[in-house]
Image 1: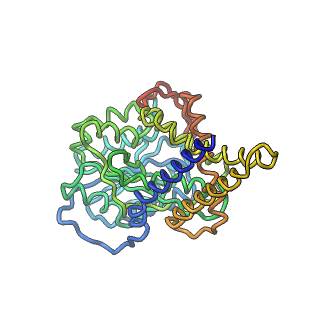
Image 2 (image 1 turned 60 degrees about the horizontal axis):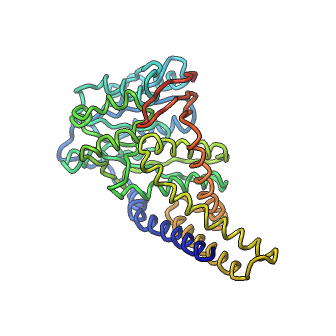
Image 3 (image 1 turned 90 degrees about the vertical axis):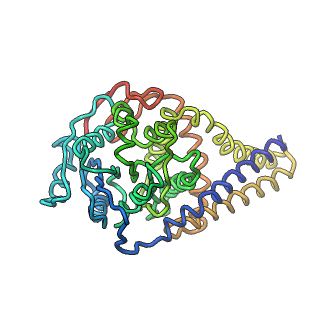
Length: 392
């Protein structure tokens, strides 16, 4: 048991340290690269930014306002809502007003795919051949003025056909769930520069229209639950992988996050993994075990010492493990866009692996996904079998 504890504890610490080292430069590049004003590209292809929108809240308004303030001149905006009853419909129309570079569409309810995909496809159909590059953005993150240009540049320069940015959680309080979501997001962010496994993030990605049409992305989206986790594997099988753009990083301010919200959000991310890349989902068992086994054995060892059933070795081993885990946590803390106190950060960092393991366990019991008031029954490949309900 001692040997098993030492091996698993070391493996967990090494894995987390390796993740930090692999992603540190990429994450900091997005954090430190300030907006430098308008920079014209040598080749500025026509582009369309398609933004699915639902609901009306402060985060959505701030996100859309930032997206509508892009400095790329050759850009059209297409904002898509589900129906007239969606609160977003009225405010989007009021926001774009009489702008000649923006249009609002009502897509109708999805019946064969996720509502977000349905909205995106309505935007793609509207744009048609009017753009050489499609940019797809979420409405709930704050974008820098040059986001579109950053995503377009590698495609315009012939370096890539598919580009993706990411987002960073900006914690506005010290709640464990808020910092837990930040830690999960930060881990995913650190994976972005690893081209062999990275997936494009649907909140900020661009793809050239020729590739989108030639490889049938619309047909994939038309029956899939999600946009990014479907386009990524679909194009990777054809030799096209996402080009990560470190500077194309949006802000996601968060506060007052509840444990239930964190659980539901993380379970949904893991369900995307299960449905769209089941081999990676199954392989994640190893990671989950490394998250669970060392802390459980450490606690059991300490309790055993207190009960007189285990040697004092366990006290030293548990302390060494906790110290090493805390040190790794402090390293990740250096990547936070907002300062967080050491003890506050440590609580969130210690809670994150355990919540991840719990949410992973939940993915074994369901083939149903709930998102934005709609439930979907999903099967392998991310294909939507049935839209179970469609209220807003």
